[in-house]
Length: 479
Ligand SMILES: C[S@@+](CC[C@H](N)C(=O)[O-])C[C@H]1O[C@@H](n2cnc3c(N)ncnc32)[C@H](O)[C@@H]1O
Image 1: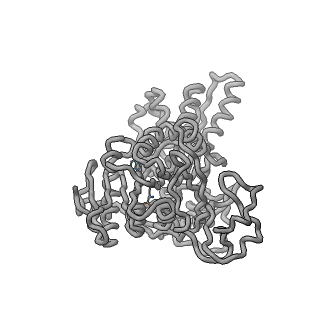
Image 2 (image 1 turned 45 degrees about the horizontal axis):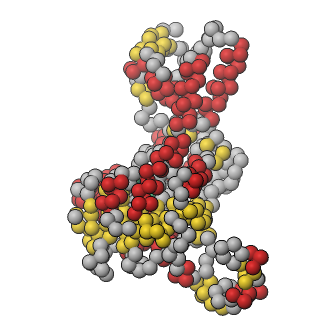
Image 3 (image 1 turned 135 degrees about the vertical axis):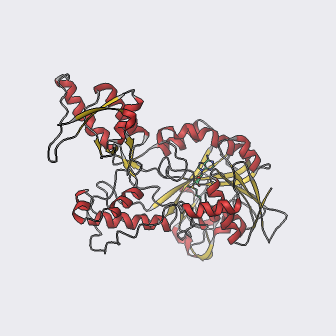
């Protein structure tokens, strides 16, 4: 069997690798390599592109490995790595470590779909381990994420559905892969708007030309960027930051294990511009890793209160049905949490702005208060819920799925920021979204006579925002 020794840098990592190696997985591979040395072989194609073992190669480079023994077996010949230097207990420990490291890798759904679509031989496609039903569910999920808000940010990183339960549904054609983040559109829009980092845009509203909205292109963890965006304090902040590394191919991702540290400066910047009676709403949902929901968002909430002295007012649930599929130990996602923080408990609160008229009014029925339920508020006796009047919503929010903004993959519906803008401020007040994405919060402010301020790091996304706002009848002007 011919062999040769190559420099490790002569191997190319697969640019289309559909496997994501989050920080926890990378460190597990490095730890295993450091402790046991190399064992499992990687697989190269004829051009020395790594087709299996990209995580191992990356870790081996970082661990200082220099050379790779490459074998060219005959078709049908198995290749085994014999580690005669191991003791029994080392061999047993390695056997566990080897299986364990595989568990924490994740899938890049878009790449999986593209790769499957490019495999025209049906038998070969089935040999990947993705059944026709898996493929159908994956494409359905991608189509939904391209059309709906926030896409697959909350997908289970433990992988694609093992069996979908939707097998009776017709499988979408493998050719119908949804468009990715519209790079052509980005190029066209950046050429039109000439967006660059550091720019401040004023967005003139025909309703109030003297009170423009604002967009700053920059990093909201930088205090000078936030000051530039908000020379005056804002009444509210509503935002959806990156969900750890769930979309790191499209914009900056933050490893879940580093998230709280990363958030330290961001919360400090937000706090420095929020009015004392203001509110902060953060939409974030953790993904699943290795069959468990990650806890970094719980760490974040705890740090907000215990380290940085925010009040945790409440948790809202936004009903947002996830893509179909099935997972070995849980059901599909059906909601996203939104965490409400404030600087103190004296916040501006206009709940009647989001009330509807109907039966079940709890307003003006103080005689029927049920004091057993008192805390800072009160609940009513059920019989008092009969009268007609304004009915306040609960903390479960139902809003329509958002419009699909071409060029941004994680847009939330305008109705979502709108709900908070209406319930927690007055007309004329200013709201900030430090991760404004496609500009949804600015639009919600325009529609509700508030002033919207957005910060977006990527000039490509900023161009998408400017176009979206212009299409909505606003006039962006470079300040
Ligand atoms: C989840 S998306 C927000 C989507 C937004 N809610 C909407 O409806 O369009 C997060 C956005 O934050 C941007 N971003 C990521 N890191 C940032 C940072 N440090 N400063 C400012 N923007 C950032 C990303 O480019 C992305 O557009």
